[in-house]
Length: 475
Length: 116
Image 1 (cartoon, chains in turn purple, cyan):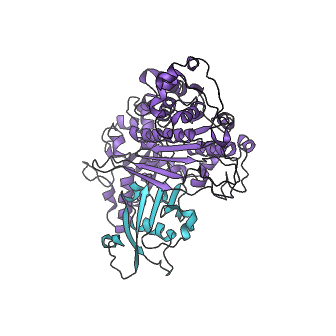
Image 2 (tube, chains in turn purple, cyan):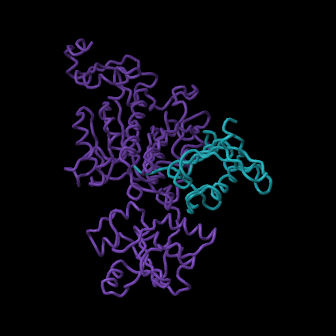
Image 3 (cartoon, helix red, strand yellow):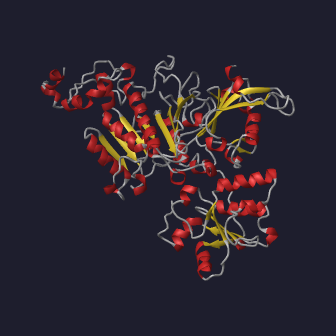
């Protein structure tokens, strides 16, 4: 068969488009295209995936005629783009405003050390061209926002959300609802990952007369308060965990395009048999603290489109024009007020003032508590600092409150020369937890009715690095 | 129920119901890993059948390893950004906090992630 194709003279020239009517009811929509012969290179390159049941020549042509938009060229976007490009999706747009940093390289497999400082979109496209020159790659070297989202997304058949913040996630989903685009969404932090296919097959906003696929808001009505949200920068991320989710995203995208599920159904009287039977939230949990602990995958069945959904539901007032002019306000929606602490000035000291006081010998005997996680502490600390992770401090404080016990147990006992009047300085990563720790210690009477000073170091170890010791290994 | 032998028997005479609870997306660090087999009171203090709302408070009071309850509950309700599934179904289909817990129910709490 290979010979048969390879020896066709026209196979190497401009493909001849023949509409054989095998593309289902929606031919004419972008992403379906007509039938044609595969070029020799296409045939050789994609043969291993084309012979998989369910793909075939028609499936491959659908991939070639499709346009995928990958938003985010990081830990999810890199592996996702790699497989999408390898599979031969015809046009691949990539949106990201960041540049490559060395801390990206353990997981963002599309970037390499020699491209540090380069725009992520350009770095990733360089990598993808090395894999496959056939697709058209479109770089968008800026962040997506309410102003530009619709214009970019409208040019694609399917969107992959590989971003890292809730405001952008809600925006992308809303635009996908309004423009009838399927959305493959994934997220990952530390040791967990999640994946869900949304709005697929796409159904116009407001249709609730049957069972339709949910949007991001149907599944996740409200964002978590910022205080409870962890970013990869703060909580860390295991490379293979986010990589696994990005690869799975590519798998779902390929499946949707091969099966032509990205095309909005035109006949709504037909029950959606082509529908992804049940929207599923895949949850991957990885274990690291306990070496023998198992990983786990769990697929949770999600409900379909919700009648009262703000974006896709019955009485939705969401419009493209509204989004562009600032309604809804995504930043505000995702940054509900969270408690912030500000201690009185006499209970605070700047990192440099603390450093100077120490070097001048003004605070010879004091206790320095460092409330960062022990992993952070392990890279380095101020001389003499004692590590009590914030979570553990709070847990101990709660136990003392509940069961009684001496408040002094909150402090490390074995430090030489510490008496009940020894001043306590508290430092954390960025200066928030330390203030809460000072409050807690005072609340439990560690300050001995004011005889002992308990002081917060403003701005935490970040300020120490910025203002005192630039070589400090702050993470 | 096959599981009932493994469920710890509470000391009091209060009738209990056996359920399983799972936590994902970082909530596992607040409650401990793995599936939790619980015997919860069949009724709350006022004698009404135990609901999901009751379970949430009950979990906070008896099962949480971490004092940061605001990572799980805000203003007496489950914090936004946590997905609740009752027997594999979105809790909105079941009446949310008002759902009356049945013996053998599986309740899953998933904190949604945003990193990438």
